[in-house]
Length: 135
Image: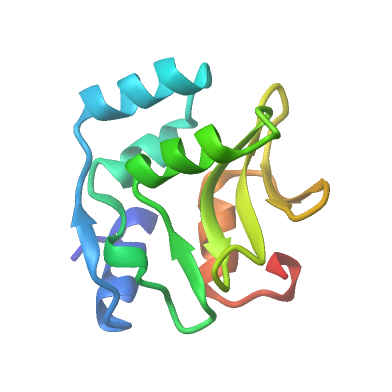
């Protein structure tokens, strides 16, 4: 597919049998940013134009699911913590993975957000490699 981290990520998900959504339009990403009052990192935008998360709540072997933008907006609307912008969950929402408004990095969130990655790319890599820091 490609030598980029995005190409390798998508290729791995396809090998693992994950059903991916068609990429999101830049307009859909920008609309989500307006609704969330949050600017996604460039790495997030680059991946999501290629694959808008997993289809039908699909998940990888370690039971993580990467959400489409539509689910991100639904989860945000239902959340009481409006500073957390989730984009994935572990084992049907045992905890979520996402961004914290006003802070750098990527966080896991159950009761309180805890940073586990400096970048979106690193977070996806840790999720895909089943690194212990994601739990």
